[in-house]
Image (spheres, rainbow, N blue to C red):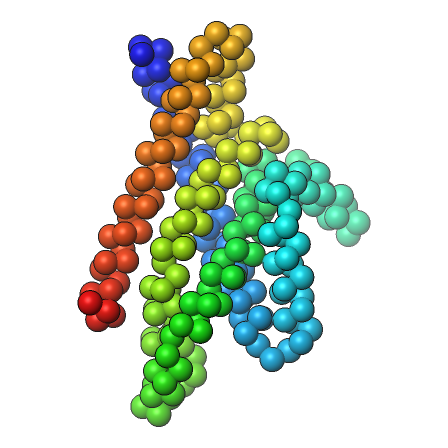
Length: 226
């Protein structure tokens, strides 16, 4: 028990790296996922097929493969145009991989949420004198966000857990530091170490879930859903 607490204390400083990976990937995933969803909702067959192809490829590829493709593949790709990113931050490559994963999934969350909003509300907003973009920003998108919010929370929890794979390319996050501690102890306290790791991820997941619940309740009051 004493060693369990000792490991927890040693791992706490590395929570910020895990949170950086998950929250940065979530934010970028929302941006690119929104773009993918817009492409799928548009009328251009080329854009629809491109978005669907990207989504299918990413969702059918394990995150660990996306991580290796990012870390080993992107430097080779940029080398073709004379740019050297081989010395780039390992955290950056991890965020790229996790963003690919999240954007594909989030696009499939956003699209049905958009269809769930009554079209009459957009038409009413346009008739009230709002431009299309104003109506989308003020009326439609807040409701899309509210409808999709529980799934956004699930996605953020998944990203927090999947970020543990980043240690495979040398990122020292919670899992990476746990591997270092385990190596220094020659595997003697492996059970305590990974119980401590699982406890931290459990607390983080609970905290995210609770935050999403509170945010959903507040948004329901603002939008008059209750």
